[in-house]
Picture 1 (spheres, one colour):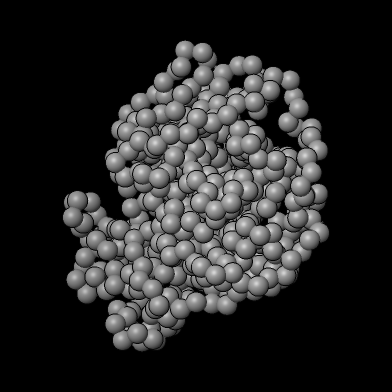
Picture 2 (cartoon, helix red, strand yellow):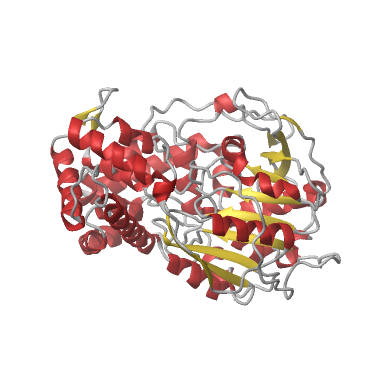
Length: 544
């Protein structure tokens, strides 16, 4: 449940070909008979949502691939009152080219990332799956074209409150500002905000499954998408088909502990990058790994004291550097590009290369939102692409994570523990600790989230599912994979990826093959089997 941005890496590998011989685990694989009804999908008033069918058409937009189709499903705003207001959820798909066996639904992570835009930009990664499936994705409720949430001008206030030393020096003042910002987020986001969490999004996926005409849900989820998949499996255990969770999220740790795990993971990823970098004569940080680590810390401190100007006139600070490096470490394929960007900064004082890595954050102006149009029947239709608020990604990320988290420490509890937490964070990472400490503040002033994820997503009775954990993952540490597998119980099969970067499907040919083989043919690797590391020097990175 990371508050740090966790979207699918934009670096793509070419689709792999060939089939790796794997062990078929027949027990627990989806059968051919009709699934048993689940208690959650038989409530009164839901039939009109489950009986709909999707009208597919060409996606509108200049950058949309011509063979990508778009559609929508209508879902209840509040599942407790299905006769009330509704909203539309945006979908996109690539049609199956081989013998069709249904659909596979993708979620790229975040939370807050637009699945439609991600599939449009990186669909080639999944073309092998079209040998058997329609490859489908969606903008979850509150995201993209699906009734997008926004904080309006409060987005910049949140950045200012948490991006400076004020959080440490004057925590009470920062908390007051965050509480006021939370009120603004509620005002600008409208009625979808109280119903934006993963529990409702998972129920939307059941509506999608039925509208797609599939007996069971075949699913590939990355990072936050693993939380979404696990929640769906807990709600609809008899509807689970072939499910893959890559970059496995925690289901139990509070936000403060997640922040510590993120700081440790990013520090480990940075250390691994520096070990690689110093072996290259072009490394701008020297030839000794220990000295390179010290140099990064000095560089951060120096830029915090004396930022350098950017092409847009804004200062580039040490914390900007930390955020950019953290994003670049999400993919091992970006290591060569990160090395060059650091050289630009160290040798020429030019931060432009590093700014490219952080372009997915909230470093843009926030405009007044355009409210989602009311259809006139008590429901919200899809939002036009040009009207999606510019802060939708970070606004949805905060809203969904907070909706899934039941902990709401008081201002007194937060201020009383901040010094102790700061020491733990700085010990976890001298580079990323301060940057991640603000994670514990982000839900202050928002309503308490659900207990469901923490208390009820466990001991599943479903078909077998494949969990992929990457040893060098800076965002979702490998131990979360094994802990979540133990929590989910006998259905969980773990694939151990001895690689770097966030998630394995885009960075490891071995992982890619094993995931595709399971989704297409039902063949699972043995529990605890592994994939070896791959060399980042074999590929060129881009901005992510």
